[in-house]
Image 1: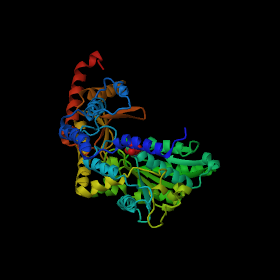
Image 2 (image 1 turned 90 degrees about the vertical axis):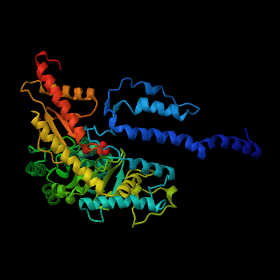
Image 3 (image 1 turned 120 degrees about the horizontal axis):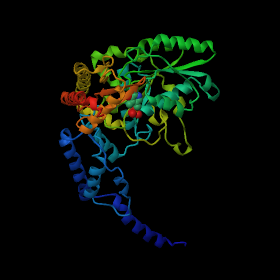
Image 4 (image 1 turned 180 degrees about the horizontal axis):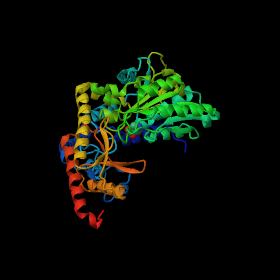
Length: 491
Ligand SMILES: *Cc1c(COP(=O)(O)O)cnc(C)c1O
């Protein structure tokens, strides 16, 4: 078994020939990049004509696409992608995507990711790449200023709002010293409209046994501050420890913004950690006319905000902002022996000290490049357009005879068709199906206190008035059909 040096040398020569296939030369790179870019370009050129929802026919097929010893041709691979991945289901790049919280995915995200991947710069630790870390930290400071945090605040670019909420809750847990023996007697205050990622984060953070207090809401789906006061008083009287209040700046269901000012003042007075989930709504602060709605957000201890929503970046960009940097470091700093040569500086924090990640995607690049190339102007205009599209829809759909929820704070609203018979929930679920069958636009629904609502969520940068008009046209058509066929109960 023992090999001589010359045998080892020969072995290495052979292996190098084969492993060098991972380093294509210029013509070989062109052979792949030209068709890949062509495929992406054809998609972008025709995206306006494409359906927003294609009912998947055979989701099993892709699982036949085995990983084998020999590579396949780029044409074959693109063909499979087109058929199996890029056609069935929701098309999130479509302006007709009006469900969940869309964003679209602006092209500069792809360019940023391309450069980030080719150079593969390490943005986890300042020592490894001061420029990359400074870029990410600059983006954090920019968002901190946007929400009114001091420059001493910090944060982290995450993969999305869920991880942002998790980092905030873990930091809150440690800052408030909620050790195992205190979990069951500590209380978290939130409403039934909180995003479920908050509850998931509590569980992941080891706080599953914490007392979750669901605070009632007013008729605008905002947290009732009076009820919050009462609940905190009751808990104190019972010897429990109020720990944290979570507010929303743009709920997912209805786009409602809580009374951040009053909640913030109350939280400060009672030494509660105050977290604001602004994953969906936060970037509407770029629209000057909307600023007042967010008044008080700067009183919070932590905020989540999603660039893959309000800045229209492709999926994979969230952010957490934390007012007191030390509280973030406390939960996330760790040193390893094998990293003893890397130095850590006080003046420029490293992302690895502020999140669970060590090696990470250089996700700052996509956001930085987008903001640098476009400037802020088109982002502000696009966000403002979404607000007006929602208001436009709200009035139009009410005029069609639909019941509407509260007047939209942002770019989400709820509506439903009512007949005063007891199967209205079923009727509205049937409307969702009809819209999906049509496929030109996509909507989603929600249930609030047992009532089934249709949702309009306008946040794709590609959504313009024509998409909202298509939805209105389908709703009008289907309700018309419904009225004429109602006696047969066809739905
Ligand atoms: C989307 C959303 C989240 C979750 O963010 P992801 O980026 O999907 O992980 C959390 N909170 C709110 C209010 C959201 O709209």
